Image 1 (cartoon, rainbow, N blue to C red):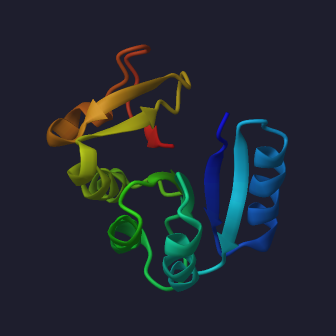
Image 2 (image 1 turned 90 degrees about the vertical axis):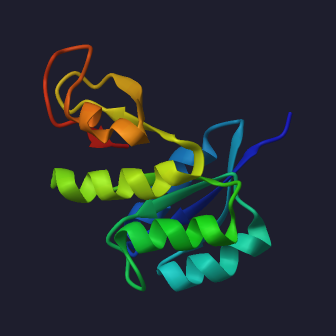
Amino acid sequence: MSRTKVLAVDDHALLRSEIKLLIGVQADLTVVGEAGTLLQAIDLAPMVLPDVITLDLSIPGGSGVAGVQRLIGVVPDARILVLTMHDDQAFVRTCVRAYGERDGSIRVRCQECGRHRTAQCDSCDSCDECDSCDRTRPRVR
């Protein structure tokens, strides 16, 4: 069985350590590298070829949409798991659209009920509602 390779990208060393700890106990996951800036991640990603990149959207060196797009540019087959504390829906939608250009979908998690669903990027207005609990403001996870 092949293990899913993860690259942890966050400017907080403590959070990177926690991500490595959580991933380390999973039999099917392995951390292949970590980076504290976007530029470090862009340099490292083509060398380690991660399957998944955990990305802090507020990372030094090019955050937000530009960071997502730059990482997709160097490792187009990697999935990006965005970690953010941003609640601004316009900001989240912009990032959803940037990632959605690649494969047309993204998973969102409702803040209220915690359920996940896939939202089509070309209809991002649907990201405002959760079909499960009829609440608004899901977060990208």
